[in-house]
Length: 203
Length: 269
Image (cartoon, rainbow over all chains, first blue to last red; front, side, top):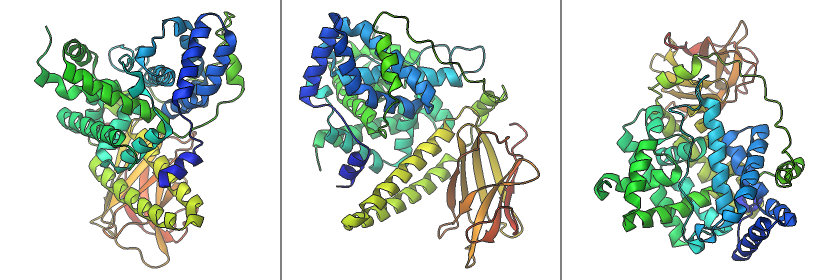
């Protein structure tokens, strides 16, 4: 009930199987040159993308730039989108997170350097090779939120520093003044608990 | 040559978070190609990172953004990027200093935050028993979330400065630590403060010039510990000192009471 209220209050919106099929259809038509399809994709996903990006870059102007970049990339890659890689929404959000963290890291970088460490851009692995499993609905997001709230704080902190701040395990270990192995364990145990919460379904 | 499973099996979680170093990532990917067990774990954990994207507070972008995003499709040159803001006035050495700040005292901070979150969550549960209290419950939960987010932002800030505070003669056992970021704010944790007299409260001050700026009130828990988060005003210089005084309940605009804690940034920073 608690999370139901929270989700409702947050104006939560996510993907159903139906909208996923429509998304794929939009991408296909977009690849074929149908620009109305782009507007529909934007209308369905811009809010979630903007929200995630804003949470990461914490600046409205930067967030708008990143959202524009994400859609530009989506338009370019529409023809190459492979449905077996997962839901369109998850695909867009993964691009959004990658670009948002790139921007964050560039902003943190010392002058004269491309990024904070060795110039490598933040990069995420390719998408989920199982569309059914890759689908996130509102209930699943609530389960993850609830499980996140129940994690030991240091596990949650490590996961959120990685997810929202784009810090590597090594950087997190330095900032929390902990052995790298401890941070690795925290991140793994934390994510496994979140996965279990998703697998168990509504509690 | 792929690494043995035992060497990398713990890396799937960091891999899906994008939290491996480039060399670790290359090693894991080489292993992943031939290991069904790791591939299955990556698939399972990917649903978690996908779901995390939907747990952030949802915000509606400005309507103008739609046109910008769609313009890049029409083959028309994308709208010019907006003018960059004036470069940060942050001194060049601060990011470097941040990487040197190793002893963050995060365990203490985390414990305080945990207590506070637990307390708020208990209140939240209680409030939810009465349907009429739902609004307050939502506000409480948002505050917990915002507090965590702000505190995390401070920890990840590029310009982090640590200030340790020592107990003054009024409270020799007390100690505190401030983690200050000009761009993200300040997290302040205290321990072993004496119990408050009736009608009094501890007030945290940031000294940046002749007139100290209030950084909020502190109500210690039973063990004399407390945590407060302070959003840094954008135009405030780095603190020369952070102090805690005992003041009338509700706080005062300028310090009037005795000092309980006082600290200055270390010379290395």
